[in-house]
Length: 114
Image (cartoon, rainbow, N blue to C red; front, side, top):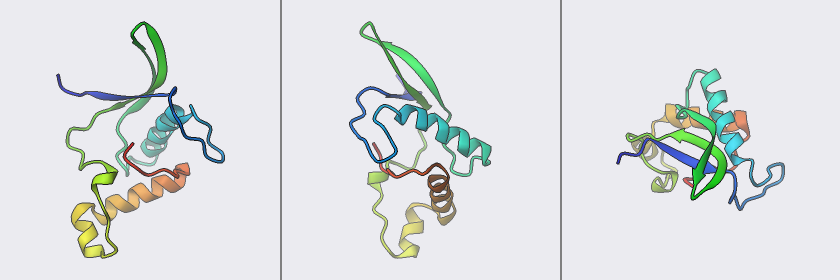
């Protein structure tokens, strides 16, 4: 079938950084969506909400995010050179600035594809 959403479980997060505890990623995913929405959806974060799903009889809490078929790709698919003319061929300057501004608003410190 077609992908319609991505589930990001709270359990299994193996990271912990100063100020961020493992297991809080799903809450942050939903918060980032809400901040982007309240700021006019400049970064176009897909609809995201908290959810509980059942897998093999076990309830898992996390966040579910609408899957975008037309996304440009994953972060690791883009190696941004220092040359602006080459970089904007991959991602427009307006899109890069909108994403950077969102990252500042929500104190995102882990821009990557995973």
